Image 1 (spheres, rainbow, N blue to C red):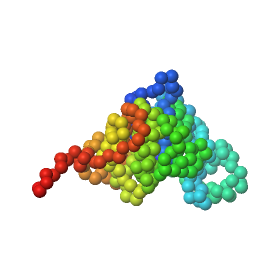
Image 2 (image 1 turned 135 degrees about the vertical axis):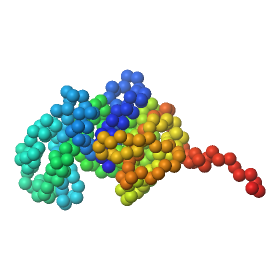
Image 3 (image 1 turned 120 degrees about the vertical axis):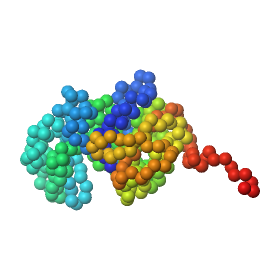
Image 4 (image 1 turned 90 degrees about the horizontal axis):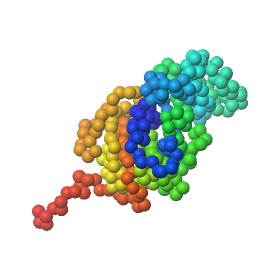
Length: 295
């Protein structure tokens, strides 16, 4: 799904609430499910970064491969350099990347569509690791395959390796578990990978038909995490792209179906270590008194 302004700002808000281990790293360790694009408008960058770091914000230059039918990264340059040179797109490509002909032929790099599209819109792809480092986070991605080469390779449909238990201050589902068939296991993995005192954060579709296997309700996350020692911090809905204000939604009461492509942003704090996962019954049914016999 990718990460935009709201994801970064809500992660910063969540980071202020977590409990850090004594003597630990000053940076907040993020574990991000799935390789996520970081797409921001230049105005959003100015809101998120300290002024002295804006010019050095790491723009990611990529290509589109018609053979692989996907985009891939090639290099990273500063925002200042990108803004100065980007309008001569092909010249920038040859000057900064200097691709060999066999590389171009192998991957059928027949257009720099992402780069040109983002120049026109004012939205730019940023290199995730370096961008997060500039605002006090470390960043690791977990994916079923490697996109940029430094991902932790795992299948979230299955239990993650014990070495990942308690590995992250904040475990982030940036729009991934809707593509996992075994959602309960993916959620259990998030619980286990999050340190006690840390947090989970979801960016999940509410009304996006066929985007993935599933759309999600706030009550799913709230009741699952509440049953496993977490406290909900927020459940907000809105659009992933842009800075349009988000709005609070009920954790349990029904509400009208939002417009198509509405996203749920959910954050919760892990209060204690959890050994065994509990599977909740939806509260509206779990708390009902038994019917009297013969009624």
